[in-house]
Length: 364
Image (cartoon, rainbow, N blue to C red; front, side, top):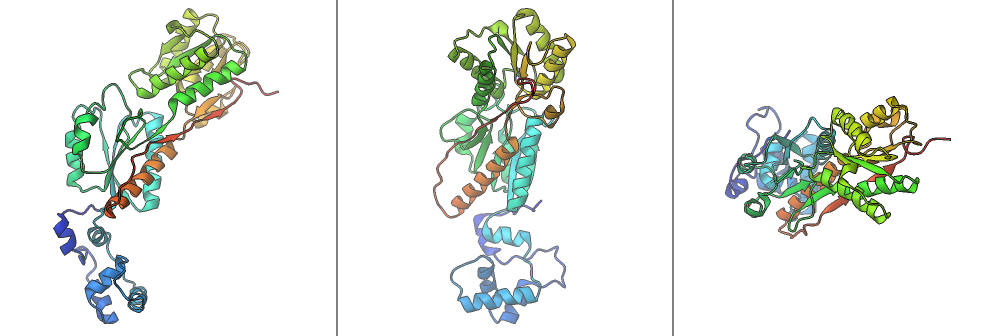
């Protein structure tokens, strides 16, 4: 992780040729390069920062001497001179769940690729977010990626606080909002795709096990299931749906409840793979043939879903891509800001993919 730089805009300018105080005293410095090249230290600094006000011959000579003398400017010095800390703040919660863990993996890999360090802040509640932003501001992060899932009203602070935040910020997994930059998988579309797949197989009584409905993703998936059934001429009822909490245990409980309240059910769309795996196991224990008696489809595409028997059909949401795109967009926002260019706030929506396996279509 890169060390973040502290100081005002004036200090950024005055420390343009700052040398890392922890550096080896025998190590080549910017002064050594300047002396051998016969130029000022300011000229070497201009070469380092790709300034245009340096003659080509001088630039080439300075770069050659840097190589000869094995000169490597410190990360601190470069961050000060460029007015960038090369540090992102990441706010996240729920790392015990698969989704946030995958998202963080995508963020980490892309940040490393682009040369950024990460300052991670895991929170349990978004009741008071102002101290979080103050903490990031004190560490002079270049931007913030808000990767906390939208649960209940935990983003109600956006209206009042967001306009006051002077740090670029990108949100992950949220509904459409004006003047907000975000990256999100289309949960609604994924649910429709899953349900339409079941309808295409001739299934007529399609139940749903949702995630916790205080989660925005769970509500979107339930809505996609409902709308797909209505479009196909069916009448989804509340007793055709049971709410889980993303866990395997809740999936088992919910499928038992559906068997009682919806005995004619011949297919079920489940809000995530963990709950779907439990539903599949319970159905098999009851002696049901999969997928003839009951077709099952999940949402996530966990690695183990391909190796169940029967293997689990699912919706693949690329959360690693979601995290990576957030980092890429953030880097572009920061660069535009440094160049005093305006950048349009446009949402990035990732289309999910239907993965068909044996739990809905038996291999012949």
